[in-house]
Amino acid sequence: MHDNTEADWHEALENQADVVGRPQVLRAGISKNVVRRRLGAGRWQRLHRGVYATFSGPRPREAQLWAALLRAGPGATLSHYTAAELHGLIDSPADQIHVTVPATRNPARQQTITGLVIHRSCRVEAARHPVLSPPRTRVEDTVLDLVEAAHDFDEAFTWISRAVGRRRTTAPLLATAAAARKRMRWRTELTAALTDVADGVHSLLERRYVTGAERAHGLPRAARQVRRRHGANGTRSTYIDNLYVEYDACVEVDGSVAHPADQRWSDIRRDNVNTASGSVTLRFGWTDITQHPCQVAMMVADTLRRRGWRGTPHPCSPTCPAARS
Image (cartoon, helix red, strand yellow):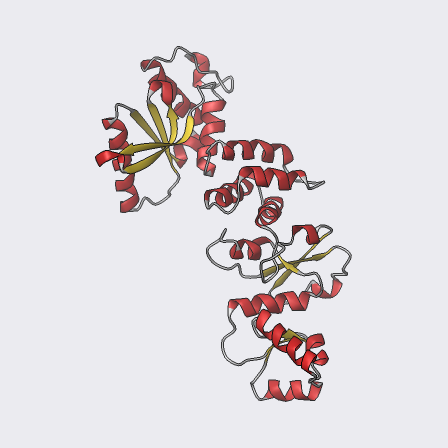
């Protein structure tokens, strides 16, 4: 190899987790026969057609990702569930690697690549993170891609709340990214959901409470994720899902299907702290909020009225219990 060629070759190996594509191999002056011998001897591995790992043994995740990018070709960017993996939005890799390529590329030959899902986009250049490697979509575009692919808006909202809850982005940044898209599925619902997330609604069940119980029945608006200090000199803190400050009433939601002992005791301690502070606490689970929101609203309304609220809950339908109160 010439000095420049050898430098390019080693740079490619270093930057691409020791995975290279056929064009890089040929530019380095390595013949097809040499590649064939190295593969036959087990010194190299074929990861995809025309993509090689220049090592033997296990294939690290980063090598798998680079192999997918090189197989997908110029402009390819990790996206959707794979970008979510890299951004810490999911805790384990998806079965398939998701890659987005420019819309101008012909995907016909790529539709059956084993282990890859190929997406096409006219804005992949704008969506690609400018620095991170391997190339991936920005976290905001990753979330919005997953929102677009969601089966329903509950799933879409889960991606939004997870990204914000894990502090990977913010509601305003997501709103800006959504506004930049000419087409956006569920745009109206997304705008409202981002407002709720910015207001402190951090889970799907919390949003179900806000929309299905509190808002739908005209209850006062609670403060969300209120920090309450306790312990010696106020050195400890708990966070209240919904606090009706004027009436010192707390509403906590519990979305756990199984309730681990440590979480159970954490909830008890939080409720005890609220009671010791003079607050009353109501705690509702998934079934309460999703299947009986009217009854939840009536219980909260009764509690608030006993503590000074002079309002009246609004019926959300002709059969709502509030219509008879």
